[in-house]
Length: 319
Image (cartoon, rainbow, N blue to C red; front, side, top):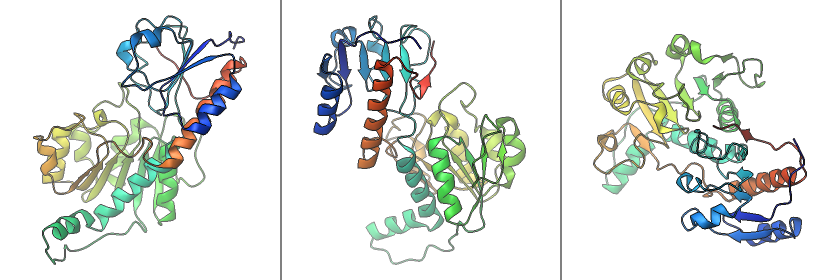
């Protein structure tokens, strides 16, 4: 990577806690810092930026000819990768590595809640109804398949192993198998192996290859009584086919932090599935304080690498 030019203007769209704002000013005293937010930033402010920290509205980037580096605060980057969104010369990086603890713990909490019938008991509590909701399950001895063994997938796999489950994975690079994962499979093997697993947990990014991966045929291949978890992108699952699999089998339950469409309209029939736990894309974000600090650590480290002309981390190729 060639040495970077002097950074004149840095546009910060991430919530700038005092310590991090001071750290930015200390590290880049010759740069002009502008603090805004994705909801307030203007096209003119984006056009003046050499570097943007955070997630600007993709529709405002057409005139960002000065932009040489966009460091996202999100792990996902699909809004910025299509051709024409960013100038060809712009380096793009995500914040992969920041969200593993928050999202994996959310996934595990969702799974345990449906295993123990907790959503039903919450409904009963609201109705002041003292009623047993029947048999529950344990993760001990269960077979768990994790689709996507990145930061989030690996963290969830560790948690599942800690609860006594046997964990397997699906990923692109089969040579990189974490020690705590029993075996790793390619995506092409998914239809063949899917019927073996009690839990299928998805932490996949959006891509043409993953769109509607779980269609009617794939869902029908899942083990009777299994649970499907999705904390990646809603486009992974065919919503109509999922409702059928929840109502008619083979699924015992599903846990979704992402949906298709999103936000899920109030009148959508998905809300009426009693064996479905929905959260409104809240597993990540900055709702857990540690995630905020992890994002800022990645942002500051990558910006320093960029300013020194060194290779940035979490680089995403676009266009």
